[in-house]
Image (cartoon, rainbow over all chains, first blue to last red; front, side, top):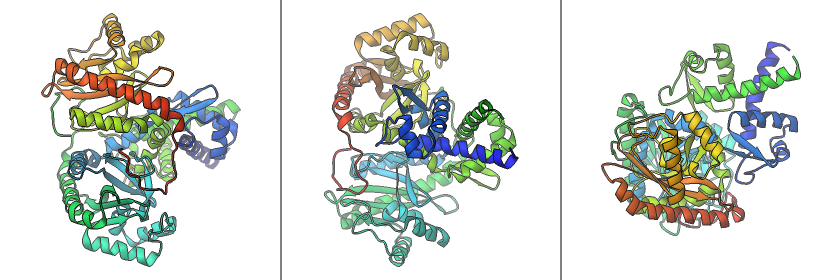
Length: 275
Length: 275
């Protein structure tokens, strides 16, 4: 076995481990080994070896032929949240925005051609999918994605257009590349985005950019509602100014807080700061 | 290389991959390769191979010698949340509890000797650590952990006592095994737990058990406050009845909802159900 082959082996078992973890979802919360093999395209012996490793590490548990994820898998994402100062900094602003609008507020980052929820204060459910931290939505069909792309380098916009194929989720999804680029241009000009019913019928959202100290857009702050509760004119009049102001405040706090932030000891003082 | 050695290799590279991911945290959000090697105890070439694999999978990004996690690592935990019907079912109840108490409400599960936050509606920050989904706290020193242990088999209680060593976090932490067992007995008798300042000075919390259809305690529902805003007498009088009732409602919904739950398609109807 050459070094190159060994290297490939290492890559492969890590890759396969994640593939098995990600094969657990809402449709298959308690899969059998055979189901996991089918879903991942791996052999049963390979899946079995991975499951036993993951079990030893505490990430899955088995019983009566079915497997499930343990809450330990949440640790991995928690390390992202803990290592990203912006998420802690944004939290009180998300809460204030949710209270003022009485709608869910979210913070999202771009990953590939998708927007990922990295922080969220849920108020009510308006999407068909159960949105939680880590939920991914197509960037091109959401206000969060438009904001994350509007100030991105042209090559990144090209990449997202190519990867997503600007797939239509509803009749209103912008699927024409030229029209999509014009929409991004408008976002850049006005400083915010409203997207209505391009991902789901009845779903409306508005977003504004959060910037780091260099001015780079690092996240989108979003407020979501439904066509039964609002419309684009009301969103623009009532929510957008609040959203832009809140995003600016998060950006300002990022500028100050990023460096001075201390993780703090575990045993402490019970101070009662506004979360 | 024998089959046994190959097997060991597979286990090892997966285990090492997770060790590298978990080496990113609030204290080391942007580590260098050398820092990651020190933290994990792995060689630099091994860390480098893992980082390149994780980068290819989209979980980390590098630049100017420093590495960071990408929001893609949140996907892994999101698969836990999505595959656990209880989390979706509990969400509106957590929100209602937070609104009624004006305090953060949480759902936690037991993992090893720790309680893990699996769902949460934050209202304000009362702990020194930034609590998010996946945050872990010692079970023995929290009301969530007491509830998760009170109805557990004796062997599990023994294990947690041994693993945690009933470590003292404040002067008030119960560290004597006999006293700890009496505390669990009291929780079992009364059906809820209040723990005051055993994890942090000034931190108070109350918890009640959530049960699956077999009656097994599968989670703890908690409400947290600070000594500046409440005390154990007020918690018991005002919050505990609400908490017990809410936990019973989640248990009842679990009993009905667990089977009939449908993940639903991505493109949908914009229904406006209370989240």
